[in-house]
Length: 303
Image (cartoon, rainbow, N blue to C red; front, side):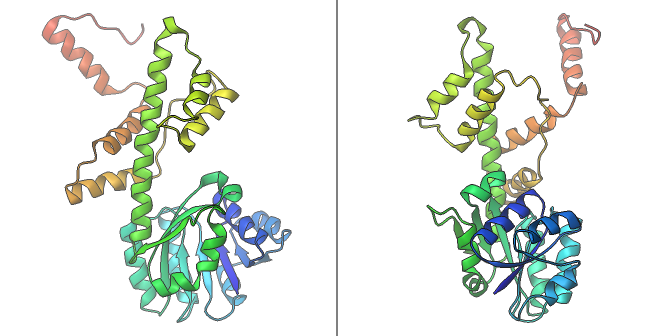
């Protein structure tokens, strides 16, 4: 069967290439026509619009959407629900909020369209290594589209998983990203402590390589740290500004809603917020209070 792919940015484009390499028949659409043309050169059938994409697909169509969470996902899903018919499947593989996915599944179901929410992890390495997928929605629709999920999964692991009803795929991915926040922050703090012990003159790159082999804290994140330190030992070209995709915030929201403590994930998210402040007022107030109650020396902004 032909599969429709909508959203051919870095991750969506890599997923499309992986499917093409495995022999899948694809119709592709993206507002950036140059990306569509590039994938057409690799064997995909190009489409100039969502309607044009749907027209090229056979009955019991499947369309996979890989666009940023938010308004663009809302519009794309709504437009596709209008174009698709009963028995078709619509998959959102982006980082949507699971509550939005639950609502979209209900909206699609009113037209007889199966909506699957697929948490997708793998980043830029997914083309070569495969993607870890967690899928929520109709089990029947999942089974019907399993050849697609199997192609996208890592070859040495059944890296795709049906997790439950609508919203559960994106909920699972949300928690995955919260865990990722905590792990990343722990590594960052650990290496900062190593660097701070200047009298030892520790080689951070060598330590990262050592920890990668046999240590209980070895992981892919540690592999990335080792690679980055080998490329640039001081990381001087980088800013300490760290963005967030939104899923860490949603994970913290869930911990509050469910009254399940998540102090590590919450703290890691707060550190990211702090990283974006060049001269935070909170720090100035701390200094002002110490000066006020104890006459402690403080640094002026010009120092």
